[in-house]
Amino acid sequence: MFGVNQLKTTALLGLLSGLIVLAGYYLMGNEQGLVLGFIVAAFTSIGSWYYSDRAALATYQAQPLAREQAPQLYDTIARLSERANIPMPKVFFVSTKSPNAFATGRDPQHSAVAVTEGIVELLSPEELESVLAHELTHIKNRDTLTQAVAGTLAGAITFLGRILTFGALYGPVTSGGRRNANPLSLIFLIVLAPLSAGLIQLAISRTREYAADQGAAEITGNPLALVSALKKLEQVAHQIPMNGNPAFSPLLIINPLSREGLQALFLTHPPTEERIRRLLELSQQPQPTPAAAV
Image (cartoon, rainbow, N blue to C red; front, top):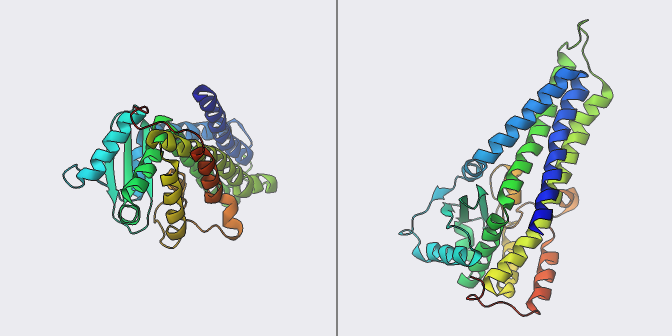
């Protein structure tokens, strides 16, 4: 199953890179556009591969947390990491009342988990444990790298479209000095390419949230704790915004954006109600004990 998921992810990320290459070609109409698009795609992919963890932590102003500062939290993450059979990630703290958490890193050996002040205050120890297990499952499944690369590529498509569209409108690109303002190219760059990139990013993120919820239930043996946590987060998270680059919102345990109107079409997470429904179904099945999950 893991191999199939990785194959699907590779294909989706390839589509994102292809959109960047097409954006360059449709704008410039020659091989130079293909080369430019390829360079941008390669640069953003490699950059997000090695620096996605730093970018995510920086965008939310996360600060490293030593064990002496929060021994109970630190020991909980260490215990859950052992059960998940992954190395202990670095621990970070975000000083905001917005209740949320996220994991990042290119692989389990280079990973980090961040929690906000708000989520530590809001949830009970059992609920917080279930959220941490959810994030550790993302690390175990290497979702953190997938989501970071997808977000970076999607952002690159939008940025490239805006920059090159400006050049098409106001700069000569043909040998005769004419401005290459092909209306179809502009529509692709301004609307279709960013929209397609966003939808691909959503397809990647939403499916992996279900898998992380299931993984959290298996690690803790208590899916109802995550149900309770999601209910609390759903009620409070949208009231207190989580400031940061929207491209990294797929990393969060719950999307802080509004679920009303057109915004609901572009949420990076599946409906919380559906996540809860699946967890309730899972709770009816025999759960492994924490000792068996090691």
